[in-house]
Image (cartoon, rainbow, N blue to C red; front, top):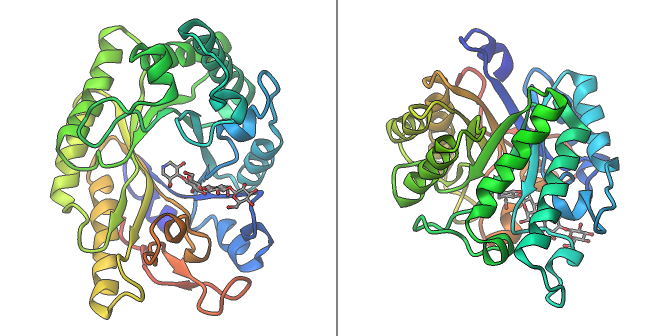
Amino acid sequence: GFNKAAKSLSPKRYFGTAADIPGTGENQDPYYMAELNNTKDFGQLTPANIMKWYATEPEQGVFNYTGGNDFLALAEANGQIVRCHNLVWYNQLPYWLTNPTTNWTAATLTAVMENHITNLIEYWGDRCYAWDVVNEALNDDGSWRETIFYEVIGPSYFDIAYKTAQAAVKAKGLKVKLYYNDYNIEYPGNKSTAAQNLVKGLQSQKIKIDGVGLQSHFIIGETPSQATQESNMAAFTGLGVDVAVTELDVRSPNLPPTAAQETQQKADYQSTVGACANTQRCVGVTVWDFDDTYSWIPSTFPGQGYGDLFFQPGGPDTPLVKKVAADGVI
Ligand code: G3I
């Protein structure tokens, strides 16, 4: 299994998956659940949705921890560590926050953001191995993404978010790692450089940032080479932060994939897992769910899919078949 292999490495790395528990169907699928609970394969879990803002603060100042608690309880019963995801993102926000008739000012929205961050970090504490504090703050050209936080507060929202997170960590004496998480920063380019500049900006103000999450939503045959991923990881770790592969999947741009694409997919998975294994401060690899049946990909990219480690040839509630034998890769 992945984690058995990972244990032979120094430092030890985790291999994990995102999941929706409680979810819309996967948590009633005994075959899906058996694999999720297979700690030989998964030593770490990430909640795919249940800790996001819409779920955790559905009304202003009214927090709902139920789903997150259920998720943590499942992971803890298995001894799986949890990357908590996420605190500040432009997507999946509650309506009270995005409602255009709410006239936020920089001061009122900052207070709302600070309250959300502080509340969740303090509530879940060290049950979270790490938090993605800000998620996807950048456009692909490296400029700021024009989110509600950017528009209302300005670019300082980013530093304020980490300063707030750091204060919560300090107030409770926590060990939780604070991450920045984004996609298309897995290879050198404007966006990766901009992410490095975000890290440097925090560091220059002595604000805590422990790691950068490289999401790694890739396409078969277009995955950056292992060498490219390693040199990109080195650019981050050279700043003194950890890196983690946080949302790995390798989708086929056409369905069904050809036999050649199926072979290439295995090589693509190996490039990313291998890059992490060769990088001292790459702490682990998380796939963004492990079963095509419940993958986010087909609804976002119609006609594409087949991106995960397993599929269910008989449909939901039937046995899983492993496509990518990631065993032995790390
Ligand atoms: O909860 C509602 C349900 O009540 C309703 O019946 C159903 C009908 O469509 O929708 C459900 O909400 C869906 C939600 O997932 C929870 O299942 C949304 O439609 C759907 O858009 C949402 O998708 C999530 C997506 O983020 C939103 O952008 C995916 O599950 C989740 O895997 C995905 O994860 C993101 C990471 O957080 C950040 N990086 C990219 C990654 C993939 O997009």
